[in-house]
Image (cartoon, rainbow, N blue to C red; front, side, top):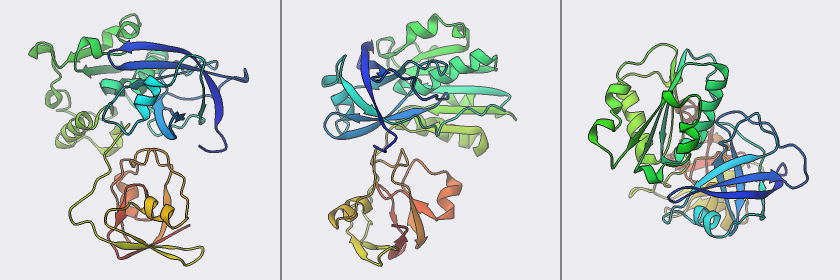
Length: 321
């Protein structure tokens, strides 16, 4: 956590749906919380030594609280389980100031919001903001079942409820989302926003690509990703520009792990190539990008990479460390 972090108290913990809890966070020193825009997230120090990113899903006009929601995922590396099992009302947590890598395109003519499961959190905030400013939008919210649909009463009670369609995996076929039809005809000025599990994201982004949606009109945020390993991963070396020290990176180690074992610390958070905390400048060499953070254009430039997950296509990477 950066020096900009501050402490908050869990004022309320609420079961929002099967396997999903929300946490209302208030600042313990009584000061207003930093302002944020729709699409923002905060880093949260979770019991057990984890740092995880959670989207803010309350009204950005509120300065007295933040609201986050967490899906309990038994297959995760421990962050979500700790939030559900170990964090209770009254507990104090350390969080970062809000960050936003998933902002609304305010010059868009219209907006299409596609939420999968817990990925609804940033999109709910976006929907409320768009409704507040009178923007044209529609939202589709896909979940396994009604019981697993967080914030459904909040959406149904909202003024924008007619713009939201719910799609349940266990519901009738007629109400399931037809991505191909929905995304078939991209329009100038219409922007697409998507957040959810990787399978959902891949399906939406694949359909958008197949239908010719321009990259500039497609916005997405992954909240988790598997660190990709490949059978042909090999050994390479990284050189620290500040000292000239060369450190080998074995095929079964990440750059961050190799550096840590050599006594070189790099700030990390998600360790999945999602949050950008460990972003490092590349001075020489060709990175093998495996992150979900950099844009295709940024990856193609080859002058920065995420050492928590990405590797090297060249025998040596010279890093600005």
